[in-house]
Image (tube, rainbow, N blue to C red; front, side, top):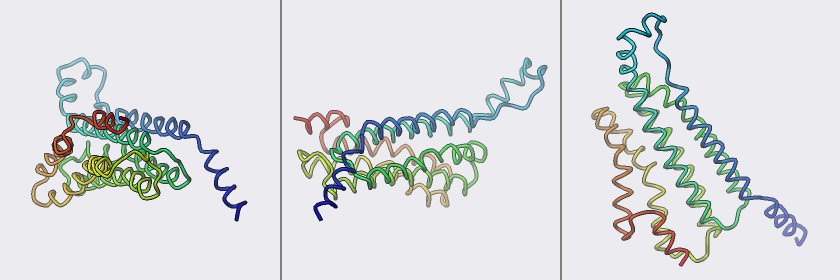
Length: 223
């Protein structure tokens, strides 16, 4: 029994949180970089590329630009959430590591639905698939947080108010994207517009807890 406890302690001591975060940051950077590579260049001859048609073709690529902007913002949002979660996790274990790896797998997958959304942004199935992909990635990130809370791997100074605040903040984005899926059946454009509620929900949660930003709330945690 003592050997088993010693073995678990040894395994935990081998987990370097810095390396986990560095690897995660690398995947975030990789996923963000791939987004721009998914924008297809217009199929034109050299002569056409120097004619007014070039501007028309570039303007016609606006759905790809839109998909990239939304997706880059969401990758940035999830990166900030990931950073916040791991700044609150004080004890790492294998479950957290594997939950993080599964999340990163889905994160690295995001350029694929982004590419589809850019090309077929008026397809109901594609918009639902795009929303589902972002929603699942967000819920997987939240799974790390909720496991850390249940397993008591978070900072002991966190109160129930802190935990509730962070939980609501982290859930905002994936919940909005999941809710947008059935809205596609009502109107595909309404579904897309509903994504702005990620920002509105974040502002509402901050106001409810009387804080303007996540960092401001974090300062109270450290106090």
